[in-house]
Image (tube, rainbow, N blue to C red; front, side, top):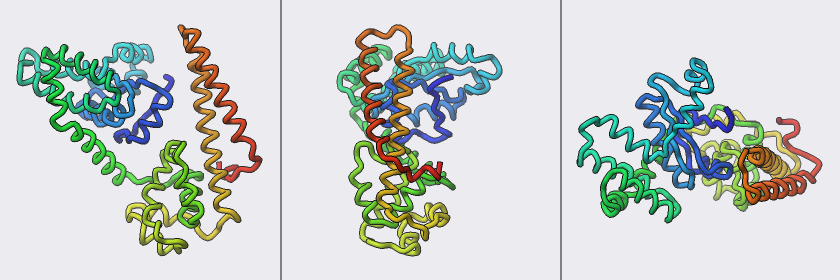
Length: 325
């Protein structure tokens, strides 16, 4: 199976969804078929929908997850489930009808309308939001106005709950170790005001877009804004307590001659990795059957543009990560 992402039991963050949107326009969620799996589907939705990603949900047999289904019945059985995957809004309505049986009446329809209304309000594209709202209203057998009223009552609640859930999960599952490149960039950013200043201007792409681990910078650096040259004891006292066990294991005594150059080199390596991944993905797309001539030319142009960017970034001969990877 190609193009698979495992969220490892946590909800997608907005940053991860934006990163994913650079590569795909649609995802199919394949969580376990139990209640916890269905709840995981909905926890992932706010970030995905807000990023403009179309979401489908695949129904797996009771007691199965993707791994057990493939091992027990073969990849074809899993692929057939993917082929039958339904748009999230249709999936939710069909699931509610199935669970209610003959009791899916006005109250049940109103409950589903309120539930889906919050998700509809997250769709960033006005035309898509309007057409999806019309489709959901028609499927439920209610007016568009009634569904829009349900969506307008408290459209941010769902996103806020998801954000809080993601933050709680993140705080409860701090990494015990990060990659060498993340440690290098974060460590030098803590020590060097020059590095912090340079990183603050990296917006296209942002560090966390190249490597989600670099989200750490958003927690480590704000407390250091008023400290020009923090000692290890100083910054350990300033950073969030839950990160101190991670940071305390880093080596702060040995510094490169030029911290800024080392970070710029590390950042360049991450950019190269990102560009090469995007180029490989475009090459895979180019081999897809049924491409129109216009789409094929667009992908070929993208590959050439990426190649030029790779060539430009590859010009420096040295790499601060050569010995770390």
